[in-house]
Image (cartoon, rainbow, N blue to C red; front, top):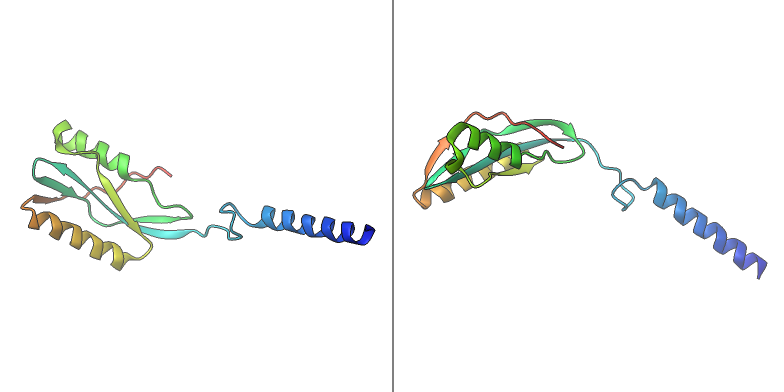
Length: 125
C-alpha cells in the first residue's frame, strides 16, 4: 500500500509540474512571437474602404485592429461611412494579399465602390 501511494504521489506531482511548465495555452506549448500581416475593410452605402496590407511587429498574439480601423473610418469619412470595420490577419503575407484581392472582388461583384486607403494601423494587443 505504501509503494502504490508513493508512486501515485510522484505521478501526481509530475503531472502538476508539467501543467505548470506547459505555457499559457495549457496544451504544453508556449506561444511564439510571429510577424502578422493584416488588412482591414469597412463601409456602408455601397462604398467599401480597404487598408493596405499592414505588417505588425512580431508578437505571440494577432493584432487587434478592428476598433481602431472603425474609429479611423468614422473620424476620416464621417459617422455614416462604416459599420465598424473588420480586419483579416495571417502569418503569411501571400495569404493576406490573396484574401484582400478575393474580398475586393466579392464587393466589386456586388457593384460596391472600392476605396483604397493608406491607413497604417494603430495596434491594441
